Amino acid sequence: MATKGVGMANKGPSFGLSRQVQDKIDSKYDSELEQILVEWISRQCGSGVGKPEAGKTGFQTWLKDGCVLSELINSLFTENKPVKKIASSPAAFKQMEQISQFLNASEKYGVTKTDMFQTVDLWEGKDLAAVQRTLSALGSLAITKEEGTYKGEANWFFKKAQENKRDFSDDQMKAGKNVIGLQMGSNQGASQEGMSYGRPRQIM
Image 1 (tube, rainbow, N blue to C red):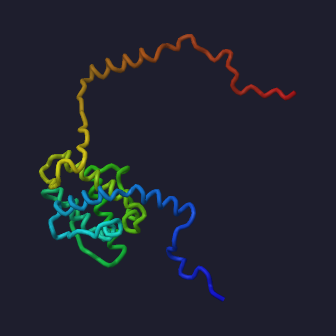
Image 2 (tube, rainbow, N blue to C red):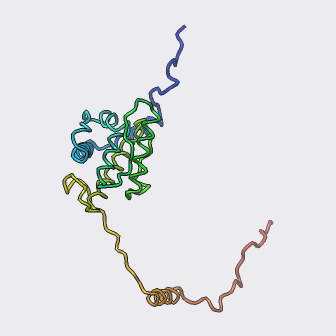
């Protein structure tokens, strides 16, 4: 008698809902954006990082050990590079550690938490669209900061809107508070008379 399901314990094919969820995530992966990101990373880091095979699997394999990503974030700094040690390793935990260093450095650079992928999104290939989102956010920041470190085309990423900081004097702040107070109207003479909160229910 043949035994069913042998070897399925690790990571068999996804069925039903999990398959649908994965398909939805996969459909968000953008192959045109992949080409832009690959071209940008190659220019940004130099020929040493090579280029991946086209397609999602090639893209994941290229970035999976975290080294290319670490080179990328370091290339956006002229000095005090955030990732101190970049070393390729066959060990899973070392690769994940390298990815984490990239994520921490990206956050310090200014990428928001909502634009960050999780380590498993890349390492296990769970959500490569999220990886693309993080890299796009990084590219946009690099263009916006205009620090002279960005080596891609100007039209590859959107320039982020610059924060418009305004300094108000204490007097202006106080005047503003008065306006808000007046807009809220007056509650003088208001009472809870006639309100029926917590009245017991009449049971007939």
